[in-house]
Length: 71
Image (tube, rainbow, N blue to C red; front, side, top):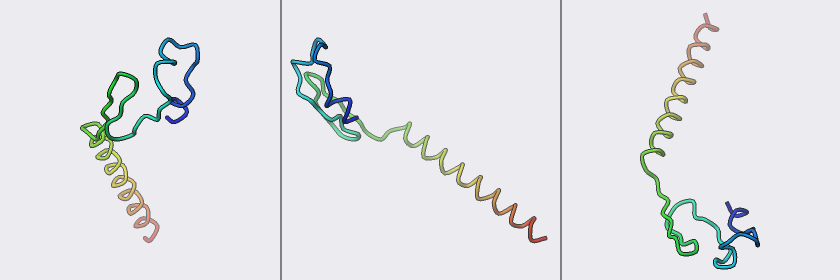
């Protein structure tokens, strides 16, 4: 993201109107005349829940494999 905001195309229409910037990952920012807001919302919680379910599934599979190897 830093490369995106710091290396503006000198031939782009608004490149002379805005200063180089680094877009924020979380929080509020201003880019030219636009304000941006990035925050954790529903999509982040869905991804987190998916990661937890995958970790639980892998743990269950590993435990099952260890039990079958023991006898």
